[in-house]
Length: 333
Image (cartoon, rainbow, N blue to C red; front, top):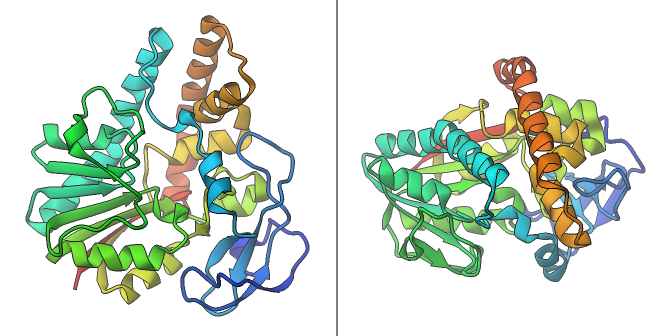
């Protein structure tokens, strides 16, 4: 058992999985965690983490069915345009953290690529697309057609389709981004190969995922927010992610561990899972119960205050390169 999952202890043993390792195809996986809870819960589910005996890749097992995964994506994970002070404050907060985090990253990627054509795979509501266009990028996105759109994102900027099977013309993009998407894919190698085709020579690929080698995964075990079973199928470390990119024909040019959008919230959501706005909203949608507006506002302000309070811890994790988020920029060879 490696240190990545050393504190997620439970029953261990080799298991043969017909789907094989998502990163190398090896059939032999070794269980290395107890059954993990779903987000917002402390009750173990039927899912655990298994480690590939060949490449060390970490994956969710048993592999959830496509229907099970589809049902686990609540409407809480996209924009709904709710009215009221709380919704406006949430929108302003999201816009700010995306601007200081993901927008900066894709703009740097465009500079490195020497071009402005960007496609964001798994763009959700299109907030990043709208911000990128305001900063000079010719940005588009891919996601399911029925997902609600961010108010500033035009429908023609988002291509509807299955991100795991959709195709694009070869050499048509300067930058392709997968921001918190690769961990959801059953076949990330196939997606990376597709991105390699889509990029023009010298184009830049941006991949951002939870970091399964982070301190929080080790310290908090199954309570770490980043496991997110069964939605997260593959759990990348910087090493396994960079190896997969190299095998797909990319040269890694930068690795970042700082994420204003995700690092602080990851720790807060791990320690106080019911306080995370997305988790709370999903629970409310399932149960049909809603909080009073004032109570919701107080909880949101407490969440933001805690997020900023843990900033010193987040910065220390970043300095030690063990933060809960890793972002890799890679150039097409």
